[in-house]
Image (cartoon, rainbow, N blue to C red; front, side):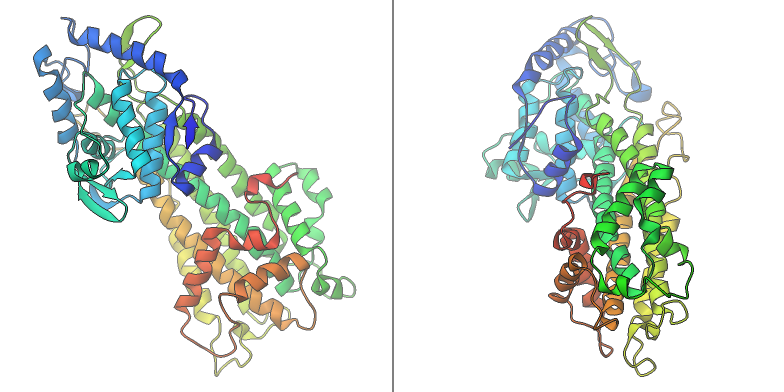
Length: 512
């Protein structure tokens, strides 16, 4: 069980929720503010003054006053009318993270949603009832309205939900675990569907996967360095200290530690005719390190957003006011998603160039063409390299910014939107592409290092190589390769290579 304190949740807690599926609860310390805000909303609902979202219509219909006896119908209609999401369902871990983020937002006590309604979200997380959330339909403006409406619909017994591996009508899923649908009070429907939690959850999932991919890439880059018998001089700590970028320093340190003790490296330390290696080898810390710094910056933004109140209107408990604002606008999330996309694309771009280097006999320092013992009869890694190039190019296209796009919606009431959902959703696809590029690099680098026998790579990299060979045998003659690529890509996604090589569990733990 993970206990969240609203306003203080950390990226490590959120990653744990996403990766482990652990149940989530709000700290009891959040309850007093939640109860005070709900009381303010209840008083406004029974009053005569028009308060947006409490006793009025929504969006362009805000000027229409709603009778107090129609409050429940107003909130229910709001949820159902906004269930217009389309496309494939978002994956369960990211939906659960989205629900946890909604708890954090509501837990700040500025939304007017009651503890009773919040408890339904906690119970669904505890008992494994996960709303089916279509992944298309949000423009990241007045919050992620459509995706969050599909979550709220399950809470009132409508829509569909996952229960274990079954996709069931919401009411049936709730009943199976002993839960009953909730009846929404004043403003509760609006508080549930307004906010940036869908976009933020998708962006966080993209961040977590990108950082793990980057850590695996430290290992693949080191193995590639040995495969082409490259110099380790560009990894010297003094070089990176002179520039000062933290990500660059961390990547260089990780690679130095991985390559320490390599017989291959020692064999050409003197009398090597080459003066300098290509940039994809020599500038690995500079490129991947810069990407890592960008990921760290995006992570800071997303941690703030994860703890933010991003619905509307907001209840200011200290003054008793209910005020309209614009915290639902997801521009910070859109920028963060664009930054993550740039980092993913560049990590993949330099990894792919190392693949290209290793299969090219004019650049690989005497490795056989396409890393096969009998080139000509066998094509070896020829088309695996082409696949990595295709994925690299696709990621470059996907990395084009989404945050600079906008389109007016809701009869021009919402006349500037962030497109944060678009920016965040693509990250999962980009990370899958990146993971496969790194997988191809591992397969090529492993072949290259093995061609250097009887010279051996470092102890750390031998462990990574052994982990690879436990799942995929060396390529001696051509074979059906797609399963090999999928197997190694899965190892990348699981963090198997960094674990085998003895690196920390997180790239953030590489000490500078």
